[in-house]
Image (tube, rainbow over all chains, first blue to last red):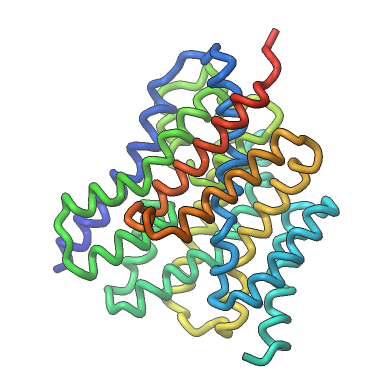
Length: 103
Length: 231
């Protein structure tokens, strides 16, 4: 049992590390194509947006409290309040919502 | 040393956001009856969220090694794209060994934040930049599996929003400054939501859904708003 678990952890670790390691380590050329460079420029924003929506609604196990936290996050993000402040406000607003709203 | 510390500072928000997520991973593993310490071992060797949850679920049904390997590869295929993208952003003089070290720390969050740094990414900066999230992720898991009842459930679930709050703090100001980024952000959100809602895509792993939404949105951006040529 233990050897099965440890081997599975090893398999997981290798299969997580390889896709991270191979391109960064062995691709040493500079990409000149304007299209590819444009594509790579937009990837971080696209990833963050796809990670956030719709998952943010399901992050607390309760759509109403997640929505209130999310809206607070959008408001403070729009006011350019910085990463840590916005993250704290989403948590605090959602926590208050969970206490206040009877479910 | 200065660059190392600056890397540590820049990734501190990621580490704080990781804590509650990895805490819930620790709780999940401990409450499913697996040996104590396993969750922390997984976190320190894997450093990923969806892959770890999937891997543990497979463990619990005694899946074969091949099955685990293929599932994990599918979920993690997105790192291939991120790693390729970072290869353009790092100091080109970085040695092979240094590249192998920092690539361990590529996650959705570290990739995104590192890509948005203004300067070229040096090895000392990246070493600090990945170290703090690794500590946050591992210590959160350890706390989760040992102190499963430390936090009230309502606070723990609210803390699950921290990472998303951080993401909003990045994409929303960027979108209000640049119409191109704004359109890419909205498109990625719509595509990701559509794939979540429509049963047609339910067979795809989360990792694959993320790749498709990301690539299509970024392709649109590159086609509609190509970036300025470098001199």
